[in-house]
Image (cartoon, rainbow, N blue to C red; front, side):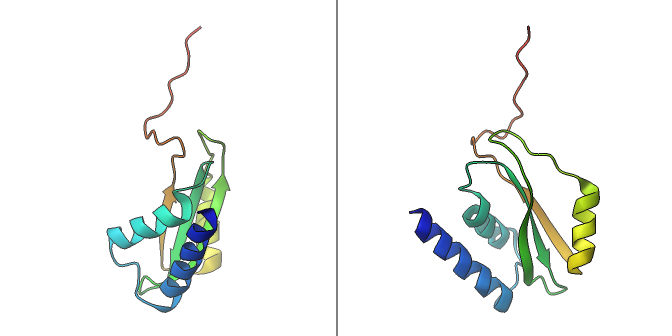
Length: 107
């Protein structure tokens, strides 16, 4: 199953570089579900786009644990400039399926 998902993700990435742009929220959501939705750990991902919203590069900028990841805005901005992206989509996943932050246990 994981191998099939990886093949679909790679094929989708290739078609986005050469084919239609990521022009709608639905297209972005579908791509991200395939690329980071199944990871067992949190990742902070960037989709670097050209001026016509074609995918230049999809890259995991930060990796965390099952419940958190640290993100450094300076590094995100630096990478956008290095890639020379005209637009960027930033996303992260929730491997636990819970979108609310975990409350610390009181002593």
